[in-house]
Length: 93
Image (cartoon, rainbow, N blue to C red; front, side):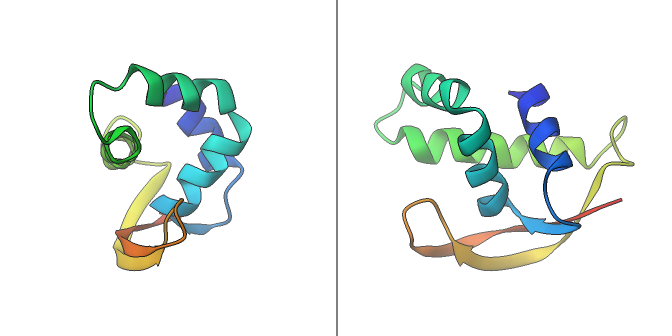
């Protein structure tokens, strides 16, 4: 997922949130997204995969990738199900 997430970050605006990135990733990497959902050993595969993407973003904001994005704050935005929920906001460096 890391390579696809890094690619999705490149196509994002200067500021974005995790929900927006998940939508971009899912749109541009449909097979990888569906595969990740299918391979999730969970009764809540969307939550599991989206959480993993959030953790990956946090890792990307640290060394050795620290020059790509930084966390700005936590916000509420629409998730993939059209519901408002909390997520991190990011800024490209």
